[in-house]
Length: 198
Length: 198
Image (cartoon, rainbow over all chains, first blue to last red; front, side, top):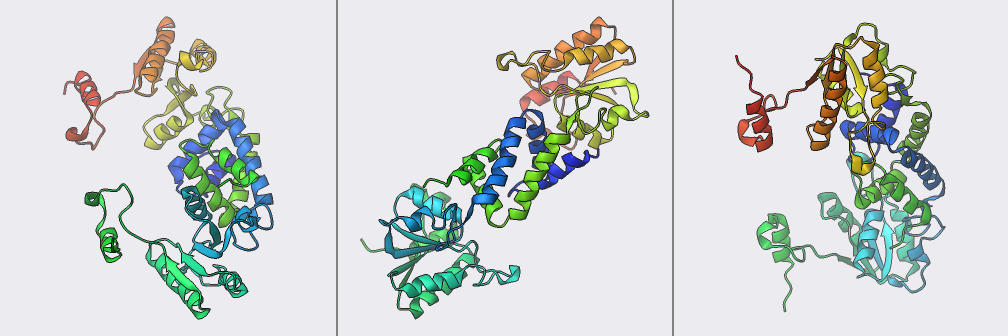
């Protein structure tokens, strides 16, 4: 059955959302047009307003609505610590843990030459100029524990080393509260290799 | 960490989508504002246009952009068969099976007194006026196989009976290609009770 043109267009547009395939998109479209009309209207205007007002922080590239994001603008954050992450969601996750008081640099991705993502696209020039300011004592590399994330961390650690700045990688190992039995082999190998004396 | 106001508003608005919780909504918002800006723009305008132009078919309540949906308007569909379903997605699924040549009536829900959904909300008055026209020989009840779906089917079958119109319920049983071993007990009980002689 062919959908009517505007319905088909909505279903197609919903597929721009991450993790949404054709079936889910159709379900979403029907829901929005059936019982969800107020929600659909709110979503359309929220999208317009966010596209209009959300920009990247001039310093750390985090999504923000001001020139500097709230973290870069906060005087009480430790300027000597800089944590490089792949995405804004990573900043939210680390902030939610409440265990970090430094600043961030959001790469918005990882090195991936095949996709045309090199240092330029990750804002490495901006990162270098922050490091060159001289206030940063330690660059914490919190990219994902994937091949690309590791490569990106390695690349950034060399930038820091060249400036005599300490670079560190977040620890990988058994999740807190996790049972050894259910942890995958790669993680266990990391946990053993990274063991610390008591 | 508090999101900036328009970002928070977008995350909240995305939760209007079925099956989207706070984490998924945040992931979607970041995606739309990071790499997905063209998609976000397209989604906003697709929503606006669909809200503007998609209405319900005057006859069968299916979502459409014309007064009559393409199925109600098609002269070659068998007018003697009317299939009552709960949602537009059910129409799409039955049409995709290619096994039905009649018309539909879309209830847009099922009887659910606790949620304030009675016959009025399901368009039963419109359904009755179609049945009263006299062209329908059989009302096929294809509501879901849930308590509410069964109750709705039972209620509609009485409407048909009162007019001397045959009412039928779609068969429930073991899915074609399914292995008995993995079929739940309720379905197996239905399959046994509904057995047909060869």
